[in-house]
Amino acid sequence: MKLLRQSLRVLFLTAIAWAGIVAATGGFQFHIGGVRVSSREPENELLAAFAAALGLIAAARLEGPGGLAAEWGWWRRAARHVVGWTRFHAHQIANAVPALVAIVVIGVQIHRWTAAPTLWLDEETIALVVRERSFTQLAGPVWLGATAPLGWLAAERTAILLFGTGELALRFVPALFGIATLAAAVGIGRRWMTPFGATILVVLCAFNQWLSHYWFEAKQYTADAFWALALPALAVWAIEADDDVTGVRRAAVWWMAATVGQFLANGAALVTPCCAIVLLAASASPRRLRGRTTAAAIAALGLMWVAGALLHYQLLMRYTLHSAYLYQFWDSHLPPPSIGLIAAVGWMFDRLEDLAGNPAGTALWVSLWVLAPIGFVVAVPRALGVVFATVPLSAFLLAGFRIVPLSDRLVLWMVPALAVGMALVMDRAARVALEAGSRRRLVPLAIAAVVAAGVVRVCVDVIARWQKDYAAESRTSSKQRMDDRTAVRWLMAQRQPGDAIVSTRLGWPAIWWYGDIPIGAEDVARGRLRDGGVMLEVKAETSAGDCDSGLRDALKGQRRVLVYVGFQDFHEPFGDLLFHRIEELGSAVAFHSFSDLSRAVVVDLRAASTRENTADRPAGCVGVQPAVRW
Image 1 (cartoon, rainbow, N blue to C red):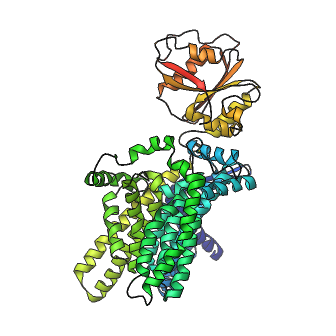
Image 2: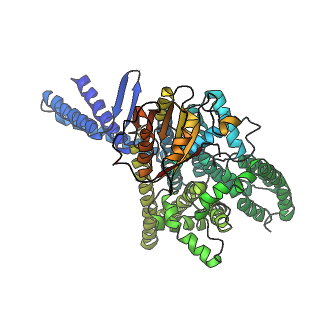
Image 3: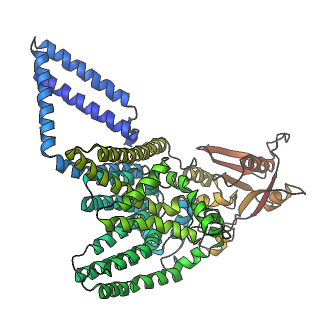
């Protein structure tokens, strides 16, 4: 009976813990061989815990009148041991909490990474660049509106050469930088903050829905976040040097890190100038024994960063900054050039709510933009607040000069700094609360409690939004409601030599990538496959003439045509219009829908059309041109 009761206790505690994990993460599902392992509803685990509790009560009663008292006594002794151990090790536990949070989230994120959902448009375009270009060719004009720092492109090309072109390989580098960001957050919290502030910092970096989302996209945004967190921290470390010689050495390390970082992340290049100004100002302080000499030496070290920036600009960034495609795409996220300073400030203020939602990951925008700046002001040490305050300041200044669009992922790099601000205000609130509590000062205690409650409220909102995204993504293998991987591979499996392929402009990257079409070759880049097939790009247009003539003429002489519609770069009815017009030219021999948006059809142009009734034909015209690499 004793063994039974021990087993039931283990079952009860395990079921309770499991229910908590499922409730926190939204559940999971994976396959081991042919066996599916799934746990999505905490009610099942709670039911198991309830059954174990009933079993314990029944087993205790079977032992006689003292059985229940003995069982209750065991739980009381266990609780006292846990409480006593917790009190004795409270400081160590509190210090370990940030690292434990980071480890748990990293484990969850790695699990999500291994699910390897399909790539989508932004990833496919950058993947095509690194697949089709050699290392020496990565420096050059922008392809497909896709660009990234040169070092990051080289890292991605290295990954696919080592591990292949699968989704896991392409997202390996972003996932590494995601892990590095959490490691940096833990390090910053441990060095400069109390456990309260350190936990807030790690939570906001770990559970931010956009920071976590870009772990699984083949883009450089996690690298942006890491360097925009690490470089300000290194600058503070350099400022805190005990003497001038150590300060110069640490500044040299910082300049080298900034020089390397700008080749891996735009965020590194963007935060460096303002951080450098604070570093030089602190070095030239009258409190320093040789302030001006030290500042001059540190400024001279900055020439390595300037040389790196000029080299990076000449090799790649000039093409990015002067890309007409990118400028047109992001122009609406820059202040209008004709407005004055006051109007530009108002324009930025109007974007605070949107920026709080994306990329900061919270709907509580007032709390975010009030509490984070307060944290910078009340920071201990003061240099920590000043340096990290320059990160969001840089984002707004660069937007004001129309250099960096003030929008979602392009300013994701300022999110960790905002998390530092929130952590610092929590740190100060905790210190004030502890001091006020010991002295029984109710007003400071109440103010600290209100501030802490505001920070916790933001954290809860951030976690809730992360959990919602996690639950939604864990139930599907598609990305952005598309499944380009399955759809294109199915379509290409139907393809015969010489078949034409038709898609919309932004549907073509999926076909080029998953269809293994080498757009680096000049003939393919101009719209013709090497087996004689043509690649055609279609779009909606108005025409006063024969709407059918352009598409019909483009397909003249072709035996079969394969059509794919995925990314919605058109008004909703156009997809139906395209399929209708194609199927009027021949007989559909295969059709398949994938996820919500991905659809593919194979049409034999030599057979009679199966669409005899044209009364339901959608209105509009289909424009057509060769699908060339842009």
